[in-house]
Every structure is written in C-alpha cells, then in structure tokens.
Length: 242
Image 1 (cartoon, rainbow, N blue to C red):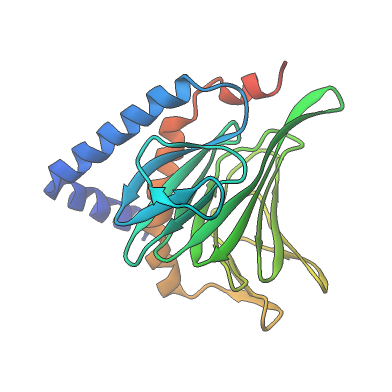
Image 2 (cartoon, rainbow, N blue to C red; image 1 turned 180 degrees about the vertical axis):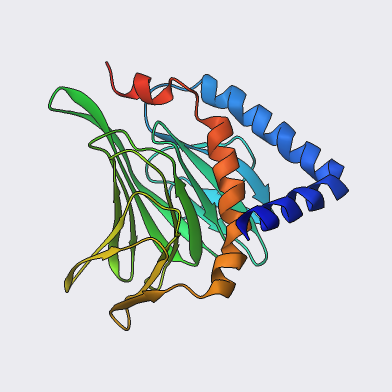
C-alpha cells in the first residue's frame, strides 16, 4: 500500500512539472544556506505554502520566506490553508506546520555533556498540528514538543521516527518509527509504540485508523525526502566533535 501511494504521488508530481521544479529550486537554495551556517542549532525554512508569518519577539510578525534561518525564541504561524516546512540542522529533523498552527522555538541549545556536544531542542506548540520526521539524533540529544498533554520527547539513540502531534494533546507514532515517543504529563510517562495513537484527554493508546495512516503517508514521505536531501553525510559526525 505504501509503495502504491508513493507511486501515485510521484505520478501526480510528474503531471505538475512546474511545481516539482519550483520545489527543487527551493531545496537547492536552502542547501546553500545550510552549508553557510555554523555548528550552532538552527531551523531553516524549506518551503512556504500560503500565508505564513514569523516573529522574533512574539509580537511583531512578518511574512515568512523560504530560506529564512531561525534561532531560539522565534515564533512561526500558518494561516488557513497554509503550511510551512522547517529543517532543524545538526539533529536531522524536519517539521511540517499544518494550517492554522503556531509554534515557538523555545529552546535551541548546544552544550557539552561528558566531553561530547549534544543538542536540546524544545518547541512550544500553541495551536494546530505538526508532522515530524526525526532521521537520527546525536546520542544524548533530545527533541521535545510541549503541548496540552505535557512534553513529547524523542531521545537520541539512532534510527528514525515519524510522528503527528497536536496542540490539544493527540500523538501518533508512525508504524515505521524506530525511535519511541515518550509523553511526559501530570500522570506520569506514556511511551507510544509504532502504529499507536495516544489521546491525552482519554488517557489511553489505541491503534491508528487505516484512513489516518493513508492520509498522513504522503506528508511523511515528503518530509523524509527533504530531510535526506538536506542532511549532509558528515553532518552528524561534525556534531559529535569539537
């Protein structure tokens, strides 16, 4: 089923060569910006569809453009029918903000632990829903998302994880994920297994519906492809040494 849907998606792109070419040019431009950045944690805008805005102080917003580089404390939001993709360099993570979503890049930190540099990334999801693909975190690093349920944590241990997280506390771990998703809330820690969905309001996990899996598959595959293109082969090795 996955291969079939991927083939359908590729066929649709072939019918829209201008759109495909435009996205390829966007990725090419972002690659140049990434290669010019330092070893510090950053988030780079991969693509913008529709009305998307950002703010450095949380008050004054400006139009978001492809290639913009974010640092700690910035706020990103998408309008009705809009979306944007962010790439978190040094941790190989791609995040898609769905329509009417607002996220604050609460923490983008790099520090030394046991003689090795590690990354700590924390997003505060105010409203909406995000898709996240983590390709491989540096050992000891963490990627966290704060929402109504508490904190969703992905810990660096190698492998790949694909997740859907909403501001109101719904979490989905794709069936192909290797890295588990831990939700830390007031009642304790819940580990969401691959192919499972956790609803914080009901406080329980259950299998993801087939329709939801199909709906999210193309989003995940797109993000996988973007992360693969934008993660240099030596990126993680550089991140693990001074």
